[in-house]
Length: 384
Image 1 (tube, rainbow, N blue to C red):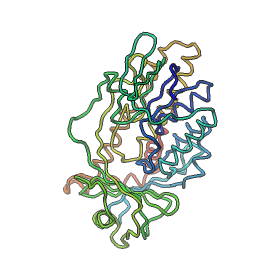
Image 2: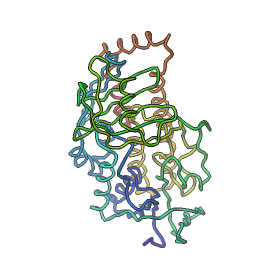
Image 3: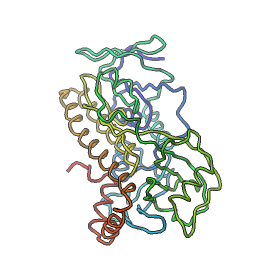
Image 4: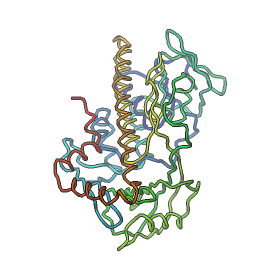
């Protein structure tokens, strides 16, 4: 049952919302977390947790249990079919986590939910938000069942189609086109590709990400015009034949699940409007290239949770303006980085020899490889 009043109402129980609430709980602040779904989804989009995100999750006790559920990827490669154009090792990262952790978003959410429960919190379901009335002392939030909650602060962690952002009147900048079409699937494959590496295949038709997950599963993500709602194994095999290895081609042996989604490159005009705060996909969305989206959202969440705890302890609420001012440029930079990775794959045929030459040259230079590793790992975002 919903409370009549709460200090912090978190709308959305994905990784971002759970991380905000778990962070607040660690400071002794009880947040109310609501989600419109009756149960957590069993399929998920994100499949990697980077080193900086693990550093951040360690602060709320979530890194170790998450590492136990995933597998380390020690290298990121960019390929053109059988040719490795760029190989980026993570062994020199200035972090205890010298790898990218390959783990389903479902597992990440489960670990964060367990951390929240261990600190006395829980998610209330299903509650669909329908109204938001801010005022000088907070906001009144209405739900589809007629319930209302009075909150001092409202956190929008309810995804790309955020009702919180919409009702708060915060513009979501970006093009009005339908967005970039992606296909994703978890499969089992017979493959000669290393199972301790993520591969980004560049092809004229668009990029293909090949990412190993626990239990022999491989996550495939690719840009596909008008991706089918329920791709079958034959469609995924055709995708691998079109963009993947040639000399020793992959063979799909089992399709576990598949789906499609569209992504715009958009960033909210502000991450704060009075008592309303945004984090994660509610605040920024972009291409999945480089696996940055969920990672940025989790880092938003912990930063926001720490800041809200300070404000609730008596510090001035202008600290939340600082949160918004610091996180929004990071979102812009990450969106641009993901876009550049996507554009690498779709360079016109005439420009591909030069692109490939530049990537292979960078692969031969340790400082260049290290800079790319730092950027992928999110470690360029650490406070100085």
